[in-house]
Amino acid sequence: MSGRIARASPWGPMVVADAHLHFFSQKFFSALVSQKPGLTLEAAGAQLGWQLPPHEPEKLAAAWVHELDRHGVFASALIASFPGDEDSVIAAARAFPGRFFAYAMVNPRALTAALPAAFADIRVACLFPAMHGYSIQDDCVRPVFEWAQAHRRAVFVHCGVLSVGFRKKLGLPSPFDMRFSNPIDLHAIALRYPEVPIIVPHFGAGYFREALMLADLCSNVYLDTSSSNQWMRYQAGHLTLREVFRHALEVAGSQRLLFGTDSSFFPRGWQHAIFEDQAKALYEIGTSEADARAIFSENLLRILGH
Ligand SMILES: [Zn+2]
Image (cartoon, rainbow, N blue to C red):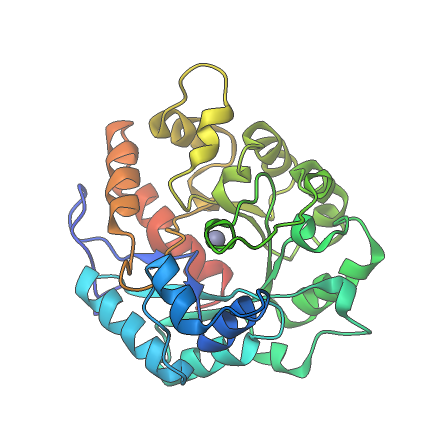
């Protein structure tokens, strides 16, 4: 790990790789804005309080590198956040080798056969079954897992509550279907592809127990810790981040948790408060330095073969 930039932490300098960061390219933003007749990029940017992304993905990538450097973050996922935007994250990752991992959203219902050729340069395919209206058990998902198995890639599957804040703010409908969001649905496919790492973000986003059940039964399932984890509100009693980590460490163990922030736009930039809160919670429950290193970077770097 020597030579990698690090960030101050309760354990001392810590190498941090963010497993969950959205790359809101101009292509993504234009596609979003086009969903509302009459809306312009400028008006949408003002409404959301977002800086307009530069046209070239390399420039947006440079802004993120600057941001990561400023916060002492070694590397980060970059998630292309609508199907068809994989070229943006590939260009970004190419411009800054070693700093970014290209993740891309794919809608398996729109695939005719295999994944697009560009996926040769994608590290993690991101599935949002509730958003695109399919079951993870459906045959349409097979090409994604076949790709991951053949090329030693990972698959990210969003489960639980899916609420896209910027869609609400812009008055765009979110016709999602929560029937397709239970981590339990992943059991059979996780067993069928035991070598494919499967990442469930936000500890299951409300399906914490189910995500843990899945992780307990399938050693290829990983949980990402990203976002402010507002789903804790759904839990009976008063669940704290400390309890979430304690429980997740007990069941999934330190080798299958991936730290993430869910950062996405500028000027907000990298969400350092998520790191501070999670590091504090982990430290307070007595997490060892070795386990913290695993969670904050080593697990992600290992499963992505970095
Ligand atoms: Zn996210």
